[in-house]
Length: 245
Ligand code: 13P
Image 1 (tube, rainbow, N blue to C red):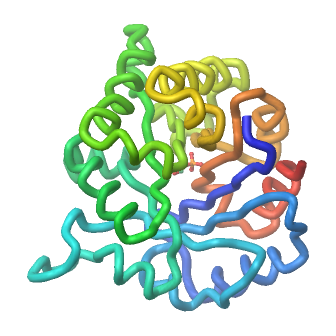
Image 2: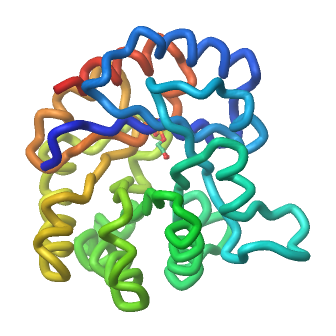
Image 3: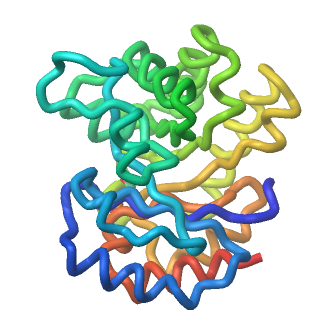
C-alpha cells in the first residue's frame, strides 16, 4: 500500500470547456495530501490551466511514435497538450476497439519511452467472474506486459476495473476489490517484490462519493479510477477529499 492515494478521473467521451472550468475551480481548494489525475478527451487537455492540484492524462495513445496514421495521437502530441499520464488497455478499448494484450504492451512501451506514466487497466468480465476465472484473467493481462517488457510495470499505475462494475452502478464490494488487489500485488511480487510494494493499484467501477470511503480503507487499494462520478465536480471533489491521508 502506498501512502498517498491517487484519484483519477476518466471522462471518456464526455465533457466540455464548461466542465474543465468547473472542475478546475473545485480542485483549487484541494490539499496536497492526495494526488489527482484528470483524463479528459484529448481535445480538452490543452484547455486545463497548469496547476499543482492535478495532473493530466490522455485516454489512449498510438502504438506508433508518429507518421501517416490519420486520426491517431502519439505520446509526444499528448505530452505537448499537457499530459503526463495515459490510460492504456481500458476495457472499453479492449471490447470496442479490439485492443489485445500485445497492442496494450506496444502502447505502454510508447508511453514509457516518451516519459508518460501508463495507467494499465485490467479486469474480468461478468462471465469470467461467474466462471471463477478472475485471477487467471488478471494474471494473464499482467504477465503479457511482464513477458514482453519486464521494466514497464515498475513505471506504471495499475487500475483494476472489473468490467461488470463499469457504468453499471454495481461496484465491487470493498472485500471483493481488496481480494483482487491483494492478488494483483502478489502477482507483481512474483516478478519483483520492490515493484509490488511501490506500484499504485487503483480500483475502478461505479466509484462514487457514497462508496469510496469503504474502498479506500482497504489495505491494497491505493486510489480510484472514476468514470461517471468524475463528471460531477462537487462529487469528484468529495471523492478526492475522502482519499486524503
Ligand atoms: P464508472 O465509474 O462510470 O463505472 O466508470 C469506471 C471506468 O471505466 C473508469 O475508467
